[in-house]
Image 1 (cartoon, rainbow, N blue to C red):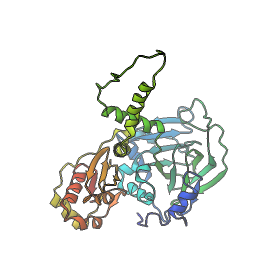
Image 2 (image 1 turned 90 degrees about the vertical axis):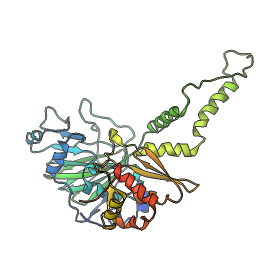
Image 3 (image 1 turned 60 degrees about the vertical axis):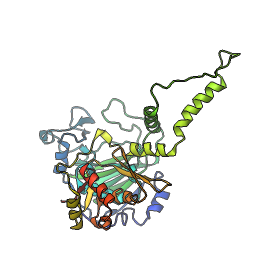
Image 4 (image 1 turned 135 degrees about the horizontal axis):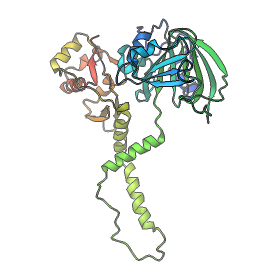
Amino acid sequence: MQTASPTSTLLGDRSPAAFLDTHWQKKPLVVRDALPNFRSPLSPNELAGLACEDGVESRLVLKEGGEHPWELRHGPFDQEAFLDLPETHWTVLVQEVDRLIPEVGALLDHFRFLPDWRIDDIMVSYAPTHGTVGPHIDNYDVFLLQGQGHRRWEIGTEPVETEEIVPDLDVRILADFEPEESFVLGPGDMLYLPPRVAHHGIAEDDECMTYSVGFRAPRHQELIGGFLQHAIEQVDPDARYSDPDLKPVEDPGAIQASARTKVHQLLEGLLKDPNDIDRWLGRYLTEPSRDRRAVPAESPVSASALVDALREGTDLRRGPVSNLAFIEHSDGTTTLFANGDAVSLDPDLAYAAPLVTGRERIPADTLTPHFEDEAFVDLLVSLVREGLLELDVH
């Protein structure tokens, strides 16, 4: 696959700053040759094979040729299921292909001008002629990179505030979609769409493959609920409201100011320590989705073996289930978050956090200058043993 610098052509002639200022969460953008000479890392048969594997989230949408219009089927599928499909008007979609195929995961490095925690996954879809999932909206930003074949996109230009959905279908299709723009994307072309902008993609030819880079947009309810659950776990379960200084009241029906103050102080106390909030946030944002867990290395690597491999030029890469992030603190320490766990790094080791986060592949030559630091080597060994990082031996 091409080794162009991550954002050299991805945004056309725009800088990342210009893109974020003009388009991000504001208006769509089409980029021709976002990745010049792009070749799909996956073949249609390989994608179908992934859709047959246990533990892989996959779907099949048949606009026509199913038991009813717009039939939705969920994987994993038997191989025979693909042999019985009609020649046209269907789509197979596979989630988290970046987790399954390192060459697909490497595509994410083109998007590292955006916060790593915001990136969700790469979904890959395949469709023969006329394959589509219908006009719809997503509640998150998405970059749609054409990997193979051609797809016609019909889109709106403004976010849809309230959508009307066609009733009684397996899939959510807009009932009143009226496209404002239309264009065909070929391999290497890309479409960016802000949240809730209506779009409709239709395969123009056989073997149409599209790579959808989706972004996380946690609901406020989820963030607040997650923090409150964290706060509940920190509270003494036997602690109760008490008022030993209670005085006689004139109005028994009133909730007195003293009682309100006690409760206000209890709730405000949850927000008094910014470090506690940050620690929760880092753990929350790196918790793997879909209840996945990293798989520890079958043969624990030794420090000497890991150092030797890296000195010989073998890079590291993220494991299949690996969410890494960090937060720097004013006292010089840094907290490294790994799949919902927190690791405190003292000021002398804080430099390690940006080296092991924010990219799919970690070049060996960025690590080798620090091998005299025993704590740094121990950190690498721990991450490799836990399956969060692995040697890129392919």
